Image (tube, rainbow, N blue to C red; front, side, top):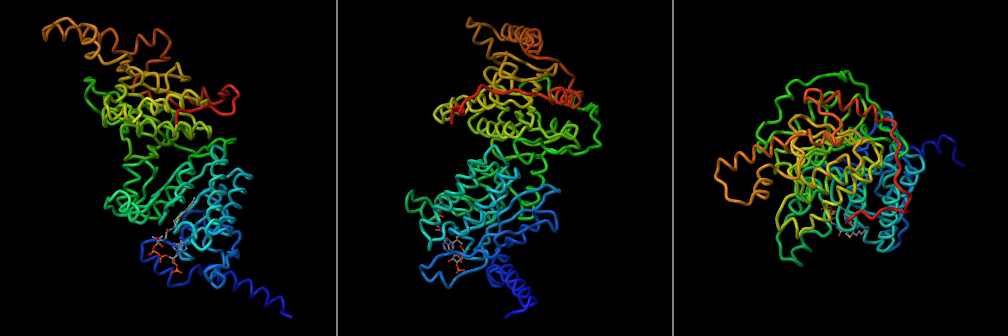
Length: 512
Ligand code: HXC
């Protein structure tokens, strides 16, 4: 009979064996490819010493294709819980060194277990993806495992934040678990996501495309909008996730944590008085305004290279998290188009689901005209943003810096769709359209240059300002740019206990 000491030794050996993953050769290959192992990634992600691993000794149960002789403790995924800045999170990390990190039934069961725990305990779920996809030897059992995960991704949506990092291959149907989560972080040059790989693309469409071009970080960052964040390397990706978690509540019943700041809530920003150019056609950088008014100049931007005419991201005012949505006059004049509408609509809905107030900064000339937009369905996609703002019940603070024209005025968190406090700068132009366009439509008669200029000036004087909207109560207060920080904080404080519910229904029917 073995002694207690022997039993303890056995446990130690089993632990060591599990921690070896696919063995030194596989680990070397992983490192040579510029990728960390699953355990190394978890070490960077969570606070030191806080990770607790579950199901370390789970093995697959397959007997086909000689798999009964090809078993590894943990079966290619590491699962458990830990802390980020002292707050509980659940994590799974696919271990590419073990059977390519592929999804087996046992492997899926491990992920499902921590997903269920994350829901029960109300804590975020973070998935570190690096996998060859469905474990081919297991066939349908693997597909069933994926679907069990997809189902839980959907049930968890809007209840706990879900974040996916793509740190290697993620292909085929496997892409849909990250796609169902709230945020996707990719790493430049070492990660890729696609529904069908380059070989299938070549066979079906005769296109020659590399993995990087088809589904690398740069593609999903700038072209498809699938990735919310792009990191230079894996450590950067994992640190971005830590930072992101700091802006979020653990679940939909909580508020995001307050982060102490020394940044004075009354701080005036004098140089903002000169930011908005007199000429309405001249661009300026909206990020300058955002960065200069938020706490400690910290703006955590999402999707910075996709639909750059709309800026979205998290920041804090007086230590409290907000979601910022802002038109960017420096890109396509800040116009609303398909991509910018979809980008911001999804962000508005995330913030609303997780009790994060919305601060909307408006300088928008309207919707982008053209067949590409109309054929692409700008009507349907623009409606998403309108819908998202109208249904959002969190505090909604709006600041119009310059243009708020036409339907885009209504869409961008206007008073009429539930803006709680709507500010405007004295430079705001709240009108059906720009002065020049308006005059050309109203006055069809022939005019010389001078007459036209006069009419435009008259129109501008009368309508291209915030006073008509303020007279009607659509703008609550006209403020100086330099006061922006304090005025937004004042509005956020006033709305802190906002409690609004929408009519009871199964769910609405957002124009998808
Ligand atoms: C079983 C797999 C595997 C898979 C990789 N491996 N993919 N085992 N099922 N899907 C194994 C390899 O045999 C190898 O095992 C180890 O993982 C590492 O793989 P390598 O090929 O050596 O690595 P690399 O050269 O880096 O190439 C990685 C790869 C390639 C690009 C991912 O392995 C690949 O193309 N795999 C097939 C991908 C695929 O077709 N997946 C199924 C997609 S369908 P050894 O024993 O040598 O270490 C799918 C459906 C999901 O996923 C549906 C959800 C609804």
